Image (cartoon, rainbow, N blue to C red; front, side, top):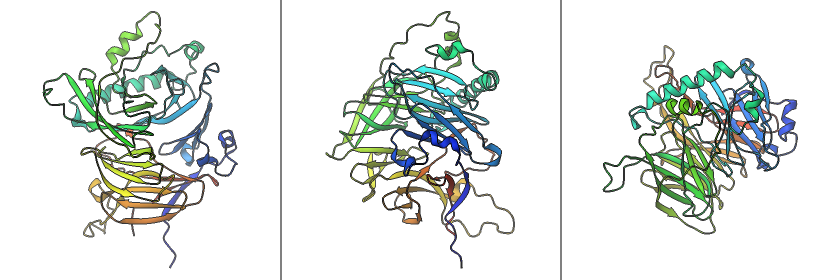
Length: 436
């Protein structure tokens, strides 16, 4: 009997344009620290210092787009972070630069927005959803943000921006409100994430502040946790974009149409000054010299975080209790992504007719890519067994599509998937979700 394949091929991104981001050399996908990848459901964005390449792999979306950002040669500015931002049918590419600029591009290669966040290197852009019950007006904020993107899409998606828009320090459509927190108490950050809301400190039950928990990792402290405060008048939307620089941690927390329009009426641009930091109170830290934190991956709910370190360990952190609940050893240079699999599915489910799995049919798992071993392991969370071992070629990389906002509650549930990109062949596959 033929062995069942553990991956399903979806398409191929191989093309001549890939040579512009380093393809053609052995290990080009994983060995180049300047090569950045961001995945959407049908397209891949690759960035290498001064160039962004968007490649589709399906027949219906097999486009190829080349974006060359207008970067400062005096400051030796380059692209240091990249991510997708998706609202229903609207998809844009978001890039961060070494000079602290946030750039938003349409799939036509047009610059939609440019804004200085902080005069420092942007290391990571995170996009994730939040539960609707975290804030009272989350749904209205999401719909407002969606309308704003629709208006921008209508005006600029198929129209070439005016030259003055690209040469200006920032685009003339206003500024996106955001918040900055300084989390340098335990040294510089290598990665960080806001895990969710948390209760206020004692004696501040009636405070006008809203509080979040942030987990950071770095060279001096493998894991650190902070309580971040924010004025409740700045409502939180579903999108959280995190910016990590050596001394700061920031979040684009809300998009306000009122502020958007009031700043749009300003007759002239004022010099952009660094925004003051909001309060960040340290909660705990784990120091284990010479061990250093390297990568942080957050579960969809934010209650678990997988952290890799410089000595080959993977720590599973409960972000609510701030306790390490599981540990793996011997995984140097590993990459972790959470995924959902159909494990122990009820056999009494109707088999005579087509059955669409629902959220309760899936189990949260952790996919661990161990490049030195040439395998991908899938472990059931939190304390479950190893479910699968998948062989993969050298030079491959695991990726995950960005969070999609605006999905209908009545549409079929889309589980969390993990994709595998083969750097040698350009083939992209998805890890199968069943254990049959």
